[in-house]
Length: 167
Image 1: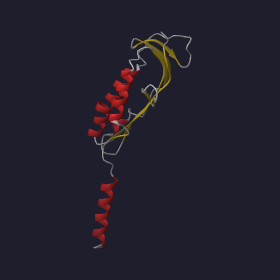
Image 2: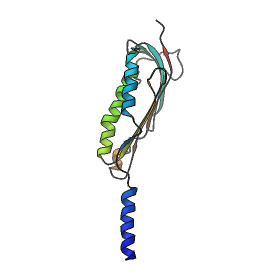
Image 3: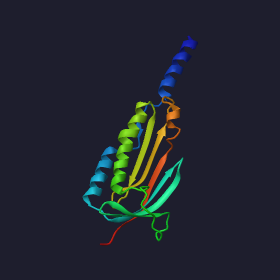
Image 4: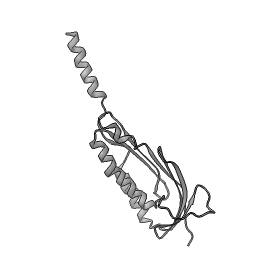
């Protein structure tokens, strides 16, 4: 009898301890609200510093100038005196909103369908409502294929030093 009780308790414990696949840390209604607030401001000319941190590629930091919603100048690092050729390494704030939505709808859903979890955190600027901090990461629950995630380490994107361009 004790043997059966131990087996039953072990099965219950195993079932309870296995994490269910899910997307955590993301609030779609907050995202939609902040995006609408950003778009309502109709800001198309600005400077912003962007920093991308990934496990494989390290850190890429630069300052961009956006005019009429398009990147017109890039500066690598904190050096704002030596303009770089446009490289498509950076994205506008509107494109960043698109990226977040793509991460949630496409990559996050794919991870969950494979049996693992996905974490997507977004912090927004309180004044201008753009995403200031984005963190995305796969949480391997032991259900999916570990090889699929070897190249998918946490990604962190930080925006700072936002300022409007004087017209």
